[in-house]
Image 1 (spheres, rainbow, N blue to C red):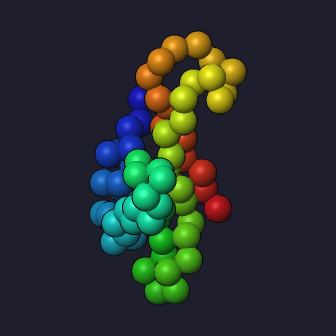
Image 2 (cartoon, rainbow, N blue to C red):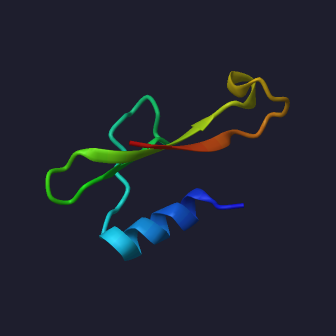
Length: 66
């Protein structure tokens, strides 16, 4: 399984991108931005499994790519 750390390591090596954590309300949500214009191209967020219709208690990381 690919983890958020794997994603962050890959985008740093390939694109020179570091995660940005812009929301106080969602401290684990990380935005990946283009270096040139600062526009986002990815969002890594963790959600409770019930939001996805799943059972369990451990939060699930989701990667949303633009």
